[in-house]
Image (cartoon, rainbow, N blue to C red; front, side, top):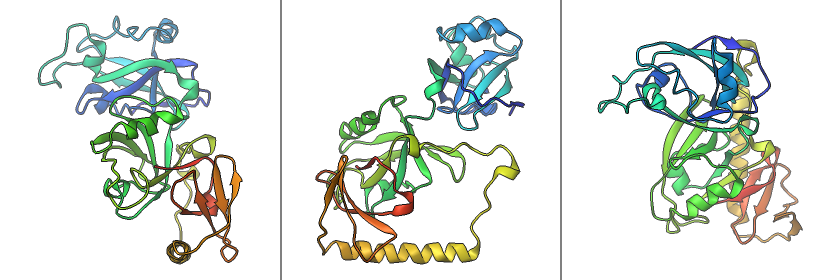
Length: 297
């Protein structure tokens, strides 16, 4: 996987890896799409400057069968590492275009600002029963939407506009699981016929408080798992919240306008808030996890 080099500071600009082909040299070297940025080539200090403005800066260095070592910065661990790999066309059944560095490595990348790495992600906070989001296997609190098959998303509205453009059509998105440290492709089918509110039936959080936490790099940094007692307490709390959520469907609460949404507080519940955003449905949300802004899609 390459040696790590401690470096908390993100490079200003770099080649952002968007896709990695299965079984390619980049894949075998554990290069991660969306999280990895190519910032240089070991032994070639002149390349780092070129990478800041030229996506073809690697072309002159990539030769089939000749190993090179990339310097890659990860937005997940906030560290740089050395990644040795050997460019090859053998992994591609149809071969690769002559002189195509990305094809020989098995990746595609674009020049972008690494200083904004990790800002444009959507945290899954809640998933409604029988919704398209549930059918696709989205996991509340553990999953983040980091991109889609059409490329990266660079502003908050991008994701919602993509959803609205794919009503009744399959939408392929890339989902990162913090619990399992994996990136997977998920197919969503936004629609209004599933029986609930929204096209996906999913609450998303976006912004500073909803970014992916930095991944621990040592065993000492890993937070211990819940004890059996703690898991039991959590299960009981969730059960109580679900009961009150069902009861809320037949009650009305007075609301006050706060920012972009209205918020109502049932006096008998201290652990949950009833959220209404615009004309969207009422949702129960754990107050300990509540962060603005929230969006029900």
